[in-house]
Length: 101
Image (cartoon, helix red, strand yellow):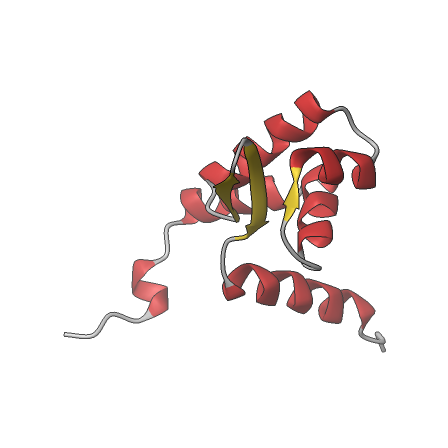
């Protein structure tokens, strides 16, 4: 039997997910990663935060499966985890840019 999305949704999990997306710093990090993979040093420079604060925010994004990390030598490189994240951000931007009646 097929399950629809509405049958599977969990209001608590969804609220927690949107809380993570509700943080300006995390949104700025995600927006920077839309242009491609970056290491913590470059992300922190672009968002104007310390590397430790940036790493903390990246850990939250990683636990929410919004970013993925790969190791290149000694460097950790972060990227948007999948196309769903890109679509979420694109849809939010489009929604907020709509002209209201």
